[in-house]
Image 1 (cartoon, rainbow, N blue to C red):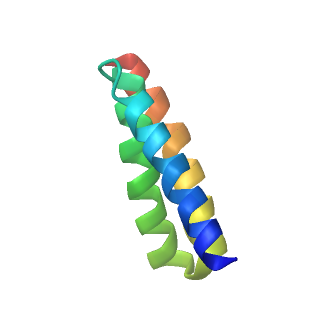
Image 2: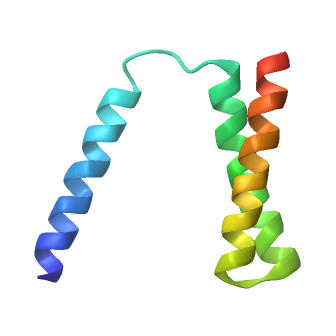
Length: 71
């Protein structure tokens, strides 16, 4: 069961990576990605745990998207 889940996850990730590279990312997409990573790191450092990380990543993605749209 674990091997099947691992293979399915790897296949899904590979598909997303291959389709994601078909065009250059926009500034909003880059901002979303950078904001999500930075927000997740800050959320984990400030609040700790999974909820802090996910909440920080969500907030960072929203802020990064807005900043990227304006560049």
